[in-house]
Amino acid sequence: MPQIIILPHEELCPDGAVLDAESGETIIDAALRNDVHIEHACEMSCACTTCHVIVREGFDSLAESDETEDDLLDKAWGLEPESRLSCQAKVGKQDLVIEIPKYTINMVSESH
Image (cartoon, rainbow, N blue to C red):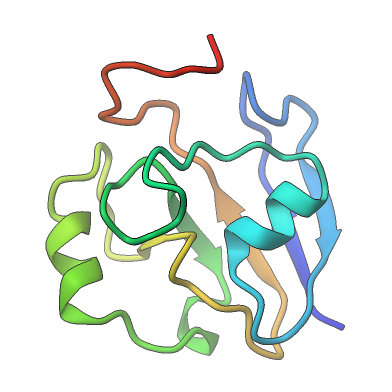
């Protein structure tokens, strides 16, 4: 069973986390199941960038992003070559190390 290692995030996961994930499960589904509340303003329908993560290790084990995801990622805060929308990136067989960016472009967050 692959693991997702989440690097510390000041608000969402101050100590970081190590999560077990199922192959084929999205990064955000594994995170939410383990009480790491990555923002997802569009309810994981690939219509915003609030679930943007940076895959620091294991990026090549993910299926390639599609054109819709790439177009959205162009609008994400802190975009890097290893950026993915966590609602679209499905865990493969390899462990992942991810970073949740400090900011999103969501102007209104219902969790605050």
